[in-house]
Image 1 (cartoon, one colour):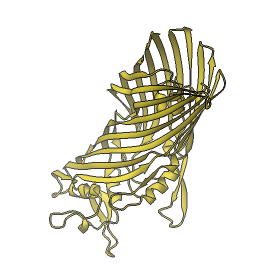
Image 2 (cartoon, rainbow, N blue to C red):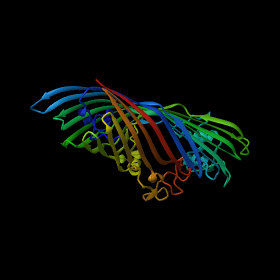
Image 3 (spheres, helix red, strand yellow):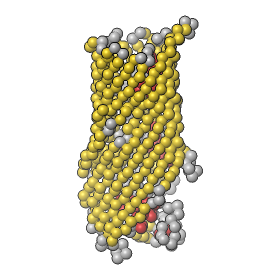
Image 4 (cartoon, one colour):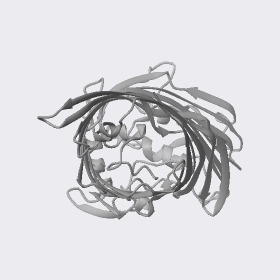
Length: 483
Protein backbone atom coordinates (compact mmCIF):
# COMPACT_ATOMS: atom_id res chain seq x y z
CA UNK A 1 0.00 0.00 0.00
CA UNK A 2 2.93 2.33 -0.56
CA UNK A 3 3.58 2.71 3.17
CA UNK A 4 0.30 4.64 3.59
CA UNK A 5 -0.46 3.26 7.06
CA UNK A 6 -0.59 6.54 9.02
CA UNK A 7 -4.36 6.33 9.60
CA UNK A 8 -4.75 2.55 9.20
CA UNK A 9 -2.31 0.86 11.58
CA UNK A 10 -2.39 -2.83 12.29
CA UNK A 11 0.90 -3.37 10.41
CA UNK A 12 4.26 -3.56 12.19
CA UNK A 13 5.89 -1.06 9.83
CA UNK A 14 3.37 1.54 11.06
CA UNK A 15 5.30 1.74 14.36
CA UNK A 16 7.93 3.76 12.45
CA UNK A 17 5.22 5.89 10.72
CA UNK A 18 2.39 6.54 13.18
CA UNK A 19 2.80 4.58 16.43
CA UNK A 20 -0.93 5.01 17.20
CA UNK A 21 -1.35 2.19 14.66
CA UNK A 22 -0.16 -0.14 17.43
CA UNK A 23 -3.42 0.51 19.31
CA UNK A 24 -5.39 -0.99 16.40
CA UNK A 25 -4.11 -4.49 17.17
CA UNK A 26 -6.70 -6.71 18.88
CA UNK A 27 -4.58 -9.87 19.25
CA UNK A 28 -0.84 -10.45 19.87
CA UNK A 29 1.16 -11.01 16.69
CA UNK A 30 4.62 -12.06 15.52
CA UNK A 31 5.63 -10.97 12.01
CA UNK A 32 8.68 -11.01 9.75
CA UNK A 33 9.31 -9.47 6.32
CA UNK A 34 12.04 -10.39 3.83
CA UNK A 35 13.28 -9.17 0.48
CA UNK A 36 13.35 -12.55 -1.25
CA UNK A 37 14.47 -10.94 -4.52
CA UNK A 38 16.16 -7.56 -4.81
CA UNK A 39 17.73 -6.07 -7.95
CA UNK A 40 19.32 -2.63 -7.76
CA UNK A 41 20.40 -1.21 -11.13
CA UNK A 42 21.99 2.17 -11.86
CA UNK A 43 22.35 3.83 -15.24
CA UNK A 44 24.98 6.60 -15.09
CA UNK A 45 25.49 9.13 -17.89
CA UNK A 46 28.66 11.24 -18.03
CA UNK A 47 29.62 13.53 -20.91
CA UNK A 48 27.25 11.62 -23.20
CA UNK A 49 28.50 8.12 -22.26
CA UNK A 50 26.13 5.79 -20.35
CA UNK A 51 27.18 2.86 -18.14
CA UNK A 52 24.89 0.24 -16.56
CA UNK A 53 25.60 -1.43 -13.20
CA UNK A 54 23.58 -3.95 -11.23
CA UNK A 55 23.76 -5.73 -7.90
CA UNK A 56 21.43 -8.11 -6.06
CA UNK A 57 20.21 -7.64 -2.50
CA UNK A 58 18.60 -9.95 0.03
CA UNK A 59 17.68 -8.66 3.47
CA UNK A 60 15.23 -8.85 6.34
CA UNK A 61 12.99 -5.76 6.28
CA UNK A 62 11.35 -6.10 9.66
CA UNK A 63 10.84 -8.44 12.58
CA UNK A 64 8.39 -7.65 15.33
CA UNK A 65 6.30 -8.80 18.24
CA UNK A 66 3.10 -7.09 19.38
CA UNK A 67 1.58 -7.83 22.79
CA UNK A 68 -2.00 -6.79 23.61
CA UNK A 69 -3.36 -6.34 27.13
CA UNK A 70 -7.19 -5.93 27.43
CA UNK A 71 -8.30 -3.49 30.13
CA UNK A 72 -12.09 -2.83 29.85
CA UNK A 73 -12.14 0.39 31.87
CA UNK A 74 -15.71 1.65 31.49
CA UNK A 75 -15.06 5.12 32.90
CA UNK A 76 -12.23 6.09 30.52
CA UNK A 77 -13.30 3.87 27.66
CA UNK A 78 -9.87 2.24 27.62
CA UNK A 79 -10.07 -1.06 25.76
CA UNK A 80 -6.43 -2.20 25.74
CA UNK A 81 -2.79 -1.33 26.25
CA UNK A 82 -0.55 -2.67 23.48
CA UNK A 83 3.22 -3.01 23.35
CA UNK A 84 5.50 -3.61 20.38
CA UNK A 85 9.19 -4.40 20.01
CA UNK A 86 11.31 -5.22 16.97
CA UNK A 87 13.05 -3.50 14.08
CA UNK A 88 12.27 -1.92 10.72
CA UNK A 89 14.82 -1.46 7.93
CA UNK A 90 14.53 2.19 6.89
CA UNK A 91 17.16 2.17 4.15
CA UNK A 92 19.41 -0.18 2.22
CA UNK A 93 22.47 1.61 0.85
CA UNK A 94 23.84 -1.22 -1.34
CA UNK A 95 24.58 0.27 -4.74
CA UNK A 96 27.25 0.08 -7.45
CA UNK A 97 27.76 2.74 -10.10
CA UNK A 98 30.44 3.61 -12.65
CA UNK A 99 31.11 6.09 -15.45
CA UNK A 100 33.79 6.45 -18.13
CA UNK A 101 34.60 8.80 -20.98
CA UNK A 102 37.16 8.85 -23.78
CA UNK A 103 38.93 12.08 -24.80
CA UNK A 104 37.53 14.27 -22.04
CA UNK A 105 38.57 17.94 -22.12
CA UNK A 106 38.49 18.14 -18.28
CA UNK A 107 40.91 16.46 -15.87
CA UNK A 108 40.90 15.80 -12.16
CA UNK A 109 44.49 17.02 -12.12
CA UNK A 110 43.07 20.53 -12.66
CA UNK A 111 41.00 20.04 -9.49
CA UNK A 112 44.10 18.85 -7.61
CA UNK A 113 45.82 22.08 -8.68
CA UNK A 114 42.94 24.37 -7.68
CA UNK A 115 42.60 22.63 -4.30
CA UNK A 116 46.31 23.22 -3.65
CA UNK A 117 46.37 26.91 -4.61
CA UNK A 118 47.59 29.04 -1.71
CA UNK A 119 49.85 26.36 -0.23
CA UNK A 120 53.60 26.90 -0.53
CA UNK A 121 55.30 23.95 -2.17
CA UNK A 122 57.83 23.78 0.65
CA UNK A 123 54.94 23.04 3.03
CA UNK A 124 53.94 19.91 1.14
CA UNK A 125 55.11 16.62 2.57
CA UNK A 126 58.65 15.47 2.06
CA UNK A 127 60.97 13.12 3.89
CA UNK A 128 62.67 16.09 5.51
CA UNK A 129 59.51 17.98 6.49
CA UNK A 130 56.55 16.05 7.94
CA UNK A 131 53.11 16.77 6.58
CA UNK A 132 51.18 19.19 8.82
CA UNK A 133 47.51 20.21 8.56
CA UNK A 134 47.35 20.29 4.76
CA UNK A 135 45.01 18.38 2.43
CA UNK A 136 46.23 14.85 1.85
CA UNK A 137 44.87 14.98 -1.68
CA UNK A 138 47.27 17.85 -2.43
CA UNK A 139 50.18 16.01 -0.85
CA UNK A 140 49.49 12.82 -2.83
CA UNK A 141 49.08 14.70 -6.12
CA UNK A 142 52.40 16.49 -5.44
CA UNK A 143 54.21 13.24 -4.58
CA UNK A 144 52.85 11.66 -7.77
CA UNK A 145 54.09 14.62 -9.88
CA UNK A 146 50.57 15.41 -11.14
CA UNK A 147 50.77 19.15 -10.35
CA UNK A 148 53.47 21.81 -10.68
CA UNK A 149 53.94 25.30 -9.32
CA UNK A 150 52.82 27.76 -12.00
CA UNK A 151 53.28 31.02 -10.10
CA UNK A 152 55.54 31.06 -7.03
CA UNK A 153 54.38 33.63 -4.49
CA UNK A 154 57.25 35.61 -3.02
CA UNK A 155 55.07 37.29 -0.34
CA UNK A 156 54.50 34.18 1.74
CA UNK A 157 50.80 33.94 0.83
CA UNK A 158 51.17 30.71 -1.12
CA UNK A 159 51.85 29.33 -4.57
CA UNK A 160 49.57 28.82 -7.55
CA UNK A 161 49.50 25.42 -9.24
CA UNK A 162 48.66 23.82 -12.57
CA UNK A 163 48.35 20.24 -13.78
CA UNK A 164 51.07 18.54 -15.81
CA UNK A 165 48.84 18.43 -18.89
CA UNK A 166 49.55 20.53 -21.95
CA UNK A 167 46.90 23.07 -22.91
CA UNK A 168 43.84 21.40 -24.54
CA UNK A 169 45.25 17.91 -23.86
CA UNK A 170 42.53 15.25 -23.70
CA UNK A 171 42.36 12.35 -21.22
CA UNK A 172 40.41 9.11 -20.77
CA UNK A 173 38.51 8.86 -17.47
CA UNK A 174 36.82 6.13 -15.44
CA UNK A 175 35.19 6.31 -12.02
CA UNK A 176 33.41 3.66 -9.96
CA UNK A 177 31.71 3.74 -6.56
CA UNK A 178 30.59 0.83 -4.41
CA UNK A 179 28.33 1.41 -1.41
CA UNK A 180 27.28 -1.14 1.20
CA UNK A 181 25.23 -0.48 4.29
CA UNK A 182 21.89 -0.02 6.02
CA UNK A 183 19.83 2.13 8.34
CA UNK A 184 17.87 -0.01 10.81
CA UNK A 185 15.49 1.26 13.47
CA UNK A 186 14.87 -0.74 16.63
CA UNK A 187 11.46 0.27 17.99
CA UNK A 188 10.02 0.14 21.48
CA UNK A 189 6.37 1.15 21.22
CA UNK A 190 3.30 1.69 23.36
CA UNK A 191 -0.30 2.07 22.13
CA UNK A 192 -3.72 2.51 23.66
CA UNK A 193 -7.23 1.88 22.34
CA UNK A 194 -10.14 3.97 23.63
CA UNK A 195 -13.60 2.65 22.63
CA UNK A 196 -12.19 1.48 19.25
CA UNK A 197 -12.47 5.15 18.27
CA UNK A 198 -9.37 6.92 19.58
CA UNK A 199 -5.90 5.39 19.38
CA UNK A 200 -2.75 6.88 20.93
CA UNK A 201 0.82 5.70 20.51
CA UNK A 202 4.47 6.46 21.13
CA UNK A 203 7.62 4.86 19.73
CA UNK A 204 11.14 5.26 21.06
CA UNK A 205 13.44 4.55 18.12
CA UNK A 206 17.10 3.57 18.20
CA UNK A 207 18.63 3.81 14.73
CA UNK A 208 21.71 1.84 13.71
CA UNK A 209 23.67 3.28 10.76
CA UNK A 210 26.43 1.56 8.79
CA UNK A 211 27.77 2.82 5.47
CA UNK A 212 30.90 1.60 3.68
CA UNK A 213 32.00 3.45 0.54
CA UNK A 214 34.91 2.76 -1.79
CA UNK A 215 35.73 4.61 -4.99
CA UNK A 216 38.32 4.24 -7.73
CA UNK A 217 39.15 7.04 -10.16
CA UNK A 218 41.56 6.68 -13.12
CA UNK A 219 42.87 8.87 -15.93
CA UNK A 220 45.18 7.97 -18.77
CA UNK A 221 46.48 9.64 -21.91
CA UNK A 222 49.68 10.95 -23.45
CA UNK A 223 51.01 11.83 -19.96
CA UNK A 224 50.69 8.22 -18.78
CA UNK A 225 48.21 7.17 -16.07
CA UNK A 226 47.18 7.83 -12.48
CA UNK A 227 44.78 6.01 -10.13
CA UNK A 228 43.15 7.46 -7.02
CA UNK A 229 41.39 5.31 -4.38
CA UNK A 230 39.22 6.43 -1.46
CA UNK A 231 37.69 4.28 1.27
CA UNK A 232 35.49 5.28 4.19
CA UNK A 233 33.26 3.65 6.78
CA UNK A 234 30.62 5.54 8.77
CA UNK A 235 29.05 4.01 11.86
CA UNK A 236 26.60 5.58 14.24
CA UNK A 237 23.64 5.36 16.56
CA UNK A 238 20.70 7.73 16.66
CA UNK A 239 17.74 8.26 18.96
CA UNK A 240 14.28 9.69 18.32
CA UNK A 241 10.72 9.78 19.62
CA UNK A 242 7.54 9.41 17.56
CA UNK A 243 4.12 10.39 18.85
CA UNK A 244 0.85 9.63 17.08
CA UNK A 245 -2.93 9.67 17.23
CA UNK A 246 -5.65 8.03 15.12
CA UNK A 247 -9.28 9.14 15.47
CA UNK A 248 -12.42 7.60 13.94
CA UNK A 249 -15.13 10.29 13.74
CA UNK A 250 -17.33 7.69 11.99
CA UNK A 251 -16.95 3.90 11.75
CA UNK A 252 -15.61 4.18 8.17
CA UNK A 253 -13.37 7.27 8.41
CA UNK A 254 -9.94 7.41 10.08
CA UNK A 255 -7.79 10.49 10.65
CA UNK A 256 -4.16 10.27 11.71
CA UNK A 257 -1.44 12.64 12.92
CA UNK A 258 2.17 11.82 13.84
CA UNK A 259 5.20 13.88 14.86
CA UNK A 260 8.77 12.55 14.62
CA UNK A 261 11.40 14.38 16.65
CA UNK A 262 14.84 14.90 15.07
CA UNK A 263 17.03 11.80 15.18
CA UNK A 264 20.16 12.67 17.18
CA UNK A 265 23.10 10.76 15.72
CA UNK A 266 26.55 10.14 17.13
CA UNK A 267 28.71 9.24 14.12
CA UNK A 268 32.24 7.93 13.69
CA UNK A 269 34.09 7.89 10.39
CA UNK A 270 37.26 6.04 9.44
CA UNK A 271 38.92 6.70 6.08
CA UNK A 272 42.07 6.48 4.00
CA UNK A 273 43.23 7.28 0.46
CA UNK A 274 45.97 6.20 -1.91
CA UNK A 275 47.26 7.40 -5.26
CA UNK A 276 49.64 5.95 -7.83
CA UNK A 277 50.97 7.25 -11.14
CA UNK A 278 52.92 5.84 -14.07
CA UNK A 279 54.08 8.86 -16.04
CA UNK A 280 55.86 9.33 -19.34
CA UNK A 281 56.95 12.32 -21.42
CA UNK A 282 56.61 14.58 -18.35
CA UNK A 283 60.08 15.19 -16.88
CA UNK A 284 63.16 13.19 -15.96
CA UNK A 285 62.26 13.25 -12.27
CA UNK A 286 58.60 12.41 -12.73
CA UNK A 287 58.73 9.68 -15.38
CA UNK A 288 58.05 6.19 -14.05
CA UNK A 289 55.98 4.76 -11.20
CA UNK A 290 55.14 6.90 -8.15
CA UNK A 291 52.83 6.38 -5.18
CA UNK A 292 51.60 8.00 -1.96
CA UNK A 293 49.18 7.01 0.78
CA UNK A 294 47.28 8.90 3.43
CA UNK A 295 47.29 7.63 7.00
CA UNK A 296 44.14 6.00 8.38
CA UNK A 297 41.96 8.74 9.80
CA UNK A 298 39.20 8.69 12.39
CA UNK A 299 36.72 11.47 13.14
CA UNK A 300 33.62 11.74 15.26
CA UNK A 301 30.77 14.25 15.12
CA UNK A 302 27.04 14.60 15.71
CA UNK A 303 24.21 15.04 13.23
CA UNK A 304 20.55 15.99 13.77
CA UNK A 305 17.95 15.07 11.15
CA UNK A 306 14.87 17.27 10.60
CA UNK A 307 11.54 17.03 12.41
CA UNK A 308 8.80 15.23 10.46
CA UNK A 309 5.03 15.71 10.57
CA UNK A 310 2.58 13.24 8.97
CA UNK A 311 -1.15 13.75 8.46
CA UNK A 312 -3.23 10.83 7.21
CA UNK A 313 -6.73 9.92 6.17
CA UNK A 314 -8.22 6.49 5.57
CA UNK A 315 -11.64 5.37 4.39
CA UNK A 316 -13.01 1.86 4.85
CA UNK A 317 -15.59 0.35 2.47
CA UNK A 318 -17.22 -2.10 4.84
CA UNK A 319 -15.18 -5.29 4.98
CA UNK A 320 -14.32 -5.25 1.28
CA UNK A 321 -11.67 -2.56 1.02
CA UNK A 322 -10.05 0.68 2.06
CA UNK A 323 -8.19 3.70 0.72
CA UNK A 324 -5.47 5.57 2.58
CA UNK A 325 -3.37 8.70 2.03
CA UNK A 326 -0.38 10.01 4.02
CA UNK A 327 1.16 13.46 3.58
CA UNK A 328 4.56 13.98 5.19
CA UNK A 329 6.21 17.38 5.69
CA UNK A 330 9.94 17.65 6.33
CA UNK A 331 12.35 20.60 6.06
CA UNK A 332 15.74 19.24 5.01
CA UNK A 333 17.36 22.67 5.37
CA UNK A 334 17.16 22.11 9.15
CA UNK A 335 19.70 19.26 9.12
CA UNK A 336 22.63 20.13 11.36
CA UNK A 337 26.16 18.89 12.04
CA UNK A 338 27.95 19.82 15.27
CA UNK A 339 30.48 18.84 17.95
CA UNK A 340 33.38 17.62 15.82
CA UNK A 341 36.12 15.74 17.66
CA UNK A 342 38.52 18.62 17.08
CA UNK A 343 36.04 21.25 18.25
CA UNK A 344 34.86 22.08 14.73
CA UNK A 345 31.40 23.75 14.87
CA UNK A 346 30.39 23.06 11.22
CA UNK A 347 29.14 26.64 10.80
CA UNK A 348 30.13 26.73 7.12
CA UNK A 349 28.70 23.28 6.37
CA UNK A 350 25.39 24.08 8.11
CA UNK A 351 25.13 27.34 6.18
CA UNK A 352 25.57 25.39 2.92
CA UNK A 353 22.90 22.88 4.01
CA UNK A 354 20.41 25.68 4.68
CA UNK A 355 21.07 27.05 1.18
CA UNK A 356 21.21 23.80 -0.80
CA UNK A 357 18.20 22.04 0.78
CA UNK A 358 14.57 23.03 1.30
CA UNK A 359 11.27 21.81 2.78
CA UNK A 360 9.20 19.24 0.87
CA UNK A 361 5.95 17.32 1.02
CA UNK A 362 6.03 13.56 0.45
CA UNK A 363 2.84 11.77 -0.59
CA UNK A 364 1.98 8.11 -0.01
CA UNK A 365 -1.32 6.58 -1.04
CA UNK A 366 -2.65 3.04 -1.30
CA UNK A 367 -5.68 0.82 -1.33
CA UNK A 368 -6.86 -2.67 -0.53
CA UNK A 369 -9.71 -4.74 -2.03
CA UNK A 370 -10.97 -8.10 -0.76
CA UNK A 371 -12.73 -10.17 -3.44
CA UNK A 372 -13.25 -12.82 -0.72
CA UNK A 373 -12.63 -12.57 3.01
CA UNK A 374 -9.37 -14.56 2.92
CA UNK A 375 -7.73 -12.68 0.01
CA UNK A 376 -6.52 -9.07 -0.13
CA UNK A 377 -5.36 -7.27 -3.28
CA UNK A 378 -3.29 -4.15 -2.65
CA UNK A 379 -1.62 -1.33 -4.55
CA UNK A 380 0.16 1.86 -3.58
CA UNK A 381 2.51 4.62 -4.67
CA UNK A 382 5.01 6.96 -3.03
CA UNK A 383 5.83 10.38 -4.50
CA UNK A 384 8.78 12.15 -2.87
CA UNK A 385 9.32 15.88 -3.17
CA UNK A 386 12.61 17.35 -4.39
CA UNK A 387 14.65 18.30 -1.27
CA UNK A 388 17.12 20.39 -3.29
CA UNK A 389 16.81 24.12 -3.95
CA UNK A 390 16.69 25.01 -7.63
CA UNK A 391 19.48 27.54 -7.11
CA UNK A 392 22.03 28.43 -4.45
CA UNK A 393 23.08 31.86 -3.20
CA UNK A 394 26.79 31.88 -2.42
CA UNK A 395 29.67 34.32 -2.04
CA UNK A 396 31.35 35.51 -5.22
CA UNK A 397 35.02 34.45 -4.91
CA UNK A 398 36.04 37.15 -7.36
CA UNK A 399 34.19 40.00 -5.57
CA UNK A 400 34.42 39.88 -1.75
CA UNK A 401 31.17 40.96 -0.08
CA UNK A 402 29.06 40.17 -3.16
CA UNK A 403 26.72 37.18 -3.52
CA UNK A 404 25.86 35.34 -6.71
CA UNK A 405 23.01 32.93 -7.53
CA UNK A 406 24.03 29.62 -9.09
CA UNK A 407 21.83 26.88 -10.53
CA UNK A 408 22.48 23.32 -9.39
CA UNK A 409 21.77 20.09 -11.31
CA UNK A 410 19.81 18.38 -8.52
CA UNK A 411 16.97 20.81 -9.14
CA UNK A 412 15.84 17.94 -11.43
CA UNK A 413 15.93 15.30 -8.66
CA UNK A 414 13.01 12.84 -8.66
CA UNK A 415 12.04 9.75 -6.65
CA UNK A 416 8.89 7.61 -6.59
CA UNK A 417 7.82 4.01 -5.97
CA UNK A 418 4.97 1.84 -7.22
CA UNK A 419 3.80 -1.26 -5.35
CA UNK A 420 1.46 -4.21 -5.99
CA UNK A 421 0.63 -6.97 -3.52
CA UNK A 422 -1.57 -9.87 -2.52
CA UNK A 423 -2.35 -11.27 0.92
CA UNK A 424 -3.88 -14.55 2.05
CA UNK A 425 -5.23 -15.35 5.51
CA UNK A 426 -5.81 -18.87 6.82
CA UNK A 427 -6.88 -19.25 10.45
CA UNK A 428 -4.40 -17.15 12.50
CA UNK A 429 -1.71 -17.02 9.81
CA UNK A 430 -1.27 -14.47 7.02
CA UNK A 431 0.96 -14.56 3.95
CA UNK A 432 1.67 -11.37 2.01
CA UNK A 433 3.63 -10.93 -1.21
CA UNK A 434 4.54 -7.51 -2.64
CA UNK A 435 6.34 -6.31 -5.75
CA UNK A 436 7.88 -2.88 -5.24
CA UNK A 437 9.80 -0.77 -7.74
CA UNK A 438 11.49 2.51 -6.88
CA UNK A 439 12.90 4.93 -9.47
CA UNK A 440 15.27 7.71 -8.49
CA UNK A 441 17.15 10.29 -10.58
CA UNK A 442 19.86 12.47 -9.10
CA UNK A 443 23.09 14.18 -10.11
CA UNK A 444 26.62 14.04 -8.70
CA UNK A 445 30.18 15.09 -9.53
CA UNK A 446 33.13 12.75 -9.98
CA UNK A 447 35.37 15.48 -8.56
CA UNK A 448 35.33 19.12 -7.50
CA UNK A 449 37.89 21.88 -7.16
CA UNK A 450 37.96 24.68 -4.62
CA UNK A 451 37.78 27.85 -6.74
CA UNK A 452 34.82 29.24 -8.65
CA UNK A 453 36.50 30.82 -11.62
CA UNK A 454 34.04 29.17 -14.01
CA UNK A 455 31.00 30.54 -12.18
CA UNK A 456 29.95 27.22 -10.66
CA UNK A 457 28.73 26.96 -7.08
CA UNK A 458 31.16 24.15 -6.33
CA UNK A 459 34.24 24.94 -8.38
CA UNK A 460 35.79 26.06 -11.57
CA UNK A 461 37.93 22.92 -11.83
CA UNK A 462 35.31 20.20 -11.68
CA UNK A 463 33.83 17.49 -13.84
CA UNK A 464 30.54 17.72 -15.66
CA UNK A 465 27.64 16.40 -13.55
CA UNK A 466 26.81 12.69 -13.72
CA UNK A 467 23.14 11.78 -14.18
CA UNK A 468 22.32 8.72 -12.06
CA UNK A 469 19.10 6.82 -12.83
CA UNK A 470 18.53 4.15 -10.19
CA UNK A 471 15.87 1.42 -10.30
CA UNK A 472 15.36 -0.74 -7.22
CA UNK A 473 13.04 -3.74 -7.77
CA UNK A 474 12.07 -6.02 -4.89
CA UNK A 475 9.86 -9.02 -4.23
CA UNK A 476 8.88 -8.84 -0.57
CA UNK A 477 7.39 -11.62 1.54
CA UNK A 478 5.71 -11.21 4.96
CA UNK A 479 4.64 -13.97 7.31
CA UNK A 480 2.58 -13.16 10.42
CA UNK A 481 1.02 -15.25 13.21
CA UNK A 482 -1.85 -14.13 15.43
CA UNK A 483 -1.32 -15.61 18.90
